[in-house]
Image (cartoon, rainbow, N blue to C red; front, top):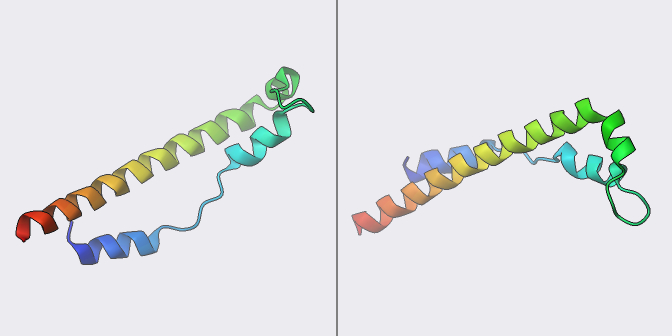
Amino acid sequence: MDAERLGECLASVPEVSLGIFRLTWELVDEKGRLDQKKVLERMPEVEAAIGEARQYVGQVQELAGALQACLQEDMDGE
């Protein structure tokens, strides 16, 4: 991936607010521990948030790999 394409990829990445962060705060008790009852009641939402986070991690890893490859190409070309 050349530097121009990498720049286009970076520019196309939207700002992300993962639901897992908001949800986690909603599922903890006053002592900061997960409230198991709340977790069970909202399990479909918990599973969706975990899936969203895993998908995001995969996309970030792919982008990081592309950046690393681009940097390596630049270093090899010097």
